[in-house]
Length: 144
Image (cartoon, rainbow, N blue to C red):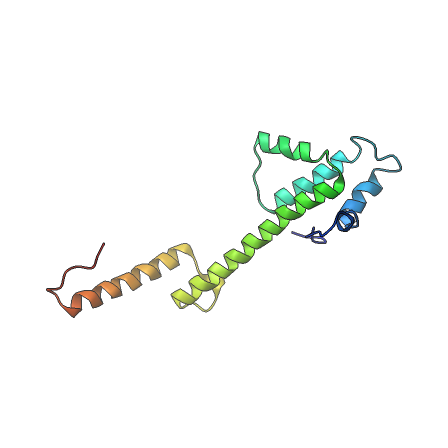
């Protein structure tokens, strides 16, 4: 996601002062009457949705269109929450990749792949089972 981050906003004044919100008002001219801000609000929401990689169904898009009729500060808050949720997901994914890399003994988290991670887990399980079996062949099998 690019541009000035949308939020978090502490007050409506914060949202009104954001460059994206100001741009909606500025582009609407001296008479920002009903419907004149909707196309730019719609674009702001659609850009946030698109940047987050969210697919929209027909009803989803209908709701985005409805939300775009609200004042720009409200639209910026919703678009900002979408963007911040996407960023939080990316951070969580990076953290999980780092943990998976450490567990697999890989130095570079970007090198961790699902097949590689599953292979490493299978290898680890095989070693654990071999150790278990070598301890006492008469011992009961590990719990399933």
